[in-house]
Image (cartoon, rainbow, N blue to C red; front, top):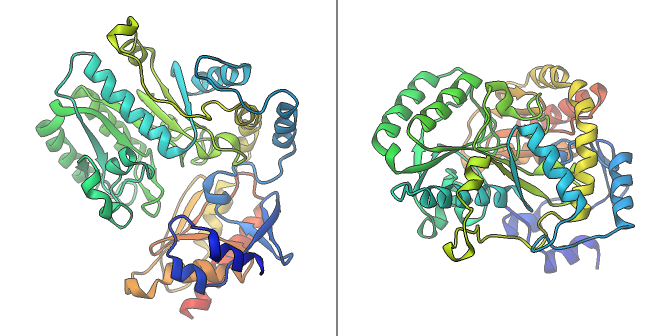
Length: 423
């Protein structure tokens, strides 16, 4: 029995329809280096998704490998329930300094980072005596993860519709599809919604500048700034989900820097460990933390935790990632990516979206059953690259360290996949 037969017998893949998975040509990835993945047949593919947006510095990075091996000589895991360790302390200090926030709570995924922020914001408002603030505002087409709270503030019906009986309802704010387009109208609607519901809101939740899972919908720094100002004017916290946009992905360490915003909560994951190990962080202010102080019998404790919170191996590789990221961001080939995607001239391409190292080639709408985006993304593999689609958008988010020549190859593979499917 080969690898794929064994996979089909026992594995359950995320966001994957079982019948379709077993019909299509699938790859078994065996090893990787730099921007390349290699399958069990020895075929090489450019990693056009940075292994789902997290391998920021590419694969088998020497500094990250060394940090992981060095930590193995000390301790692989120690709970943070009643204990602490140097790596978590160092990493919390580094992240607080970078974000200009004060407190760091570790978890293990982007979804849990958002879940933590939601629960912290809710509990802080309750313990501050603002009992009416029980709701959240979030953007249309938002994606914040797949745990129940994170799904509740998400807004993509395809992913979330079936779970509605399990969810709480968010106040849904309109979002522009492109930066600068219709932003004034979206802000006008947001003002009306805040005026109506603002007294019930404990927080606004938003992906800054780019709504990744929505197909790279983008808004301007000015739009984000105004939206956050509206939330604060109505007494709500600001939670920014930088799981996808953080760690250099938009051209700055965090996307919110481009709008001059320091949120009340910042949610981080993906690129934090360079894709090596699961680790997430929820950062917040000292003012929020103070709402959780008091004698034990006041039960103001944040009763939430994870077994692998602050795992020492993950913290070690995250610290090494933070050492390497500034240099990578200074040399970011963002212009090369934007130009390479713009050079794709196939008549089926409706538009190209790009910011930093986040891009999408959006195809003209077709019958949903045709699934042209999905088919084109799969076809790109035959041209030497692994990419994924979100509906009609073929998403391109390679490692930050990809070379200019590799970016050119990646764009040609996407163009080849489109041409193979659409002629």
